Length: 167
Image (cartoon, rainbow, N blue to C red):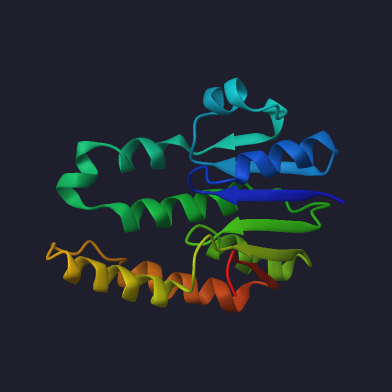
């Protein structure tokens, strides 16, 4: 069995990848974190790691603060991850929400099981909670973009399974 992981960031994906690699199940880890960071902190075969570092670099830069390019970076990462995925002999694709739409579309044609990792509640519910908290604190809201909300809802529909730490 071969499993690939797509994650725009870190979350617990590196721990999962490390354990899958130890058991010889990991085919690929595609992330926005730099390969040197992963090599230093995790025991994952470097040949299995594909780093799309530009997303992380620009997202943390002043350019994102000035031009609010999060949605573009998300789209770039999603498409680039799909372009770098090796579907030959891939049994399961685990993708983090917001970053897996293109890959899940392709997985449908490749007879590969797709599992969406959603680290929180439904995206719309999460946005409502954020909105309420910003109002309670009388702060200017920084809510989830409509693009991300729509994209995640499409990922929910495409996924064969969804992993959530909630009911």
